[in-house]
Structures are given as C-alpha cells and as structure tokens.
Amino acid sequence: MIDSFFPFSATTGPITVRVAVSYLPEQSHPALGRWFWAYHVRIENHGEVATQLISRHWRISDGRGQESEVEGEGVVGEQPLILPAGRSIMYRAVRCQRPKARWWAAMRWR
Image (cartoon, rainbow, N blue to C red; front, side):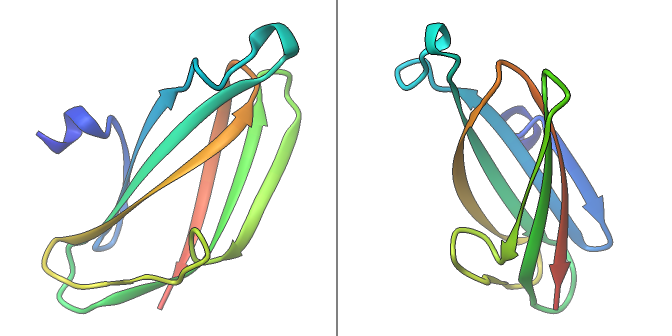
C-alpha cells in the first residue's frame, strides 16, 4: 500500500528511503522558466537499533544537463533519530527546477 503513495524507493541495509514527487502548478510559472516541485521523503528503519541521519548529499541534473549539488547536515535543519522496528520519519522539500530533472542522493548514518 505504501508503494502507491511513494513510487520511488531504495533500500540499503535496514534503511529504506521512499520519495514521491508532486508538481505545484499554483507556484509554477513556466512562461518565466520556473517550475516548482514538492519532494515528499519517507525514511524507514527496519533494523533492530535506532539510527541517526548525520548528513545528506544531493546531486541534481536538470533537463538541460546542468548539475547542482546540495549537501549538509541532516535534513531540514535536523539530524533525526529513527527508532527501529519499521519506524519512520517524513519531511517535505520544495525545489525550483526545470520541467524535468534527475536526482541522486547519498545519506550518512550513525
């Protein structure tokens, strides 16, 4: 059922990261070259011990092949602790992008 809400996912060890993307037409202005997208991210811990997200590194390639990178501590200004046994956290990010883009992510855990 969760797959219908979060169609993109990747699992490494006990951690699963799921992503859903929503276009925000009310904030977008294609005639001005601006498209706004909301990224809904769910991070699940299926392990037996708590884990903490220390940092993240995003690499974004837009439809024109231009790349940008975003990196820093945790997500949304926090380094969340995710309890074990299938517990999860969710956050939302909004980006101004081209009409299409590709994202790659790396996250460091403790």
